[in-house]
Length: 439
Image (cartoon, rainbow, N blue to C red):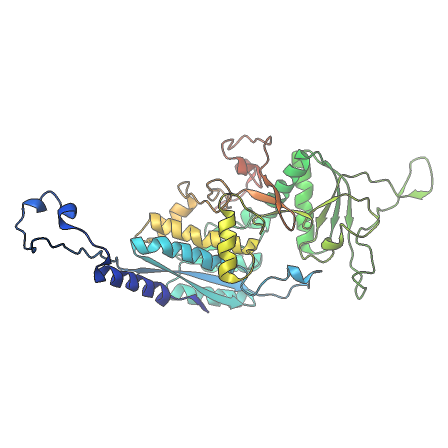
């Protein structure tokens, strides 16, 4: 599916050239000629002027591919959590538009080609099609297994993949690949960002409630790691078990504590669980949205995958140019920008920035620039950002936000580290000395 045609941008370029040729850019000869030209014979009429036509550079196409995997997913508790049909694609198009705004001056014309698939095998076929038609930079909205199959197919080819969906820590560790750049944070980064804020606020005793999916368990593990790392105390870990066929509003979502035997008494008791925060691990949003309002738990702050969350983007984000970005996005796409849109935007802007710095668009040079320290992106979060050299993870601040507004930005002050003290965002996720990635 072609979502942004070359013809539109080319038509704009030709139109500008026509305007220039029509004489709207005028240069008076006495003020525009060089010192050498002043002594050359003049063939102009007295009192006349010369028209200098700006030369339009030859436009070199830079086509970016987009592979989107559509898979069956559980229906979330709220229809507000259902992604838009153009989720991610809209953000990529916003980046393409910005790329073309600057690319026209150096002769680069960007386009986006989207392939929608429903399996890993279809994804590989789509990547092959894109590669054979000249696409070297591919945004991937897919699961971890599919991403790895794409990476393996492209291992010996001039292809660079940008992961905007899969949060699996293994993709940055034992399964890391040099041809994958991870725009989306992994679960460790997200959990660390949230943990830093909770500890900073003095909310250090956590009750963890998790679902039964692999993703929920992975996020639970990330939360437990983050708690140990930053000094929190997890007072209890409980699993929410959905009752098949039961009414969604018929069961309180907070499961009770498991009974245990008191040392000096034979009766079963439920231990009191004094906690400051309920941390929820429910990535499919099955029960988490109900957590703050039902169940027998003590009324506390709810955080994790619902309530107070760690995220790459919030529609309420207003600092560092974010207001303009949100407004432009809403004007063009008639909806608010979601985290997946922002990550796709970062991916396409990464390509645009690198190709501008390496205008010959030599793949090896562009890829090396993206992997290296000279890439400096500023996607509305206050600092310059680039990818970590040891695992390809994008270094970025993480917003701590409610469903309406951000309340903070992590990393928080006061959590130093030894390996890169000058880069505060490396306190989020796996730091270089911890990494087992071998790219």
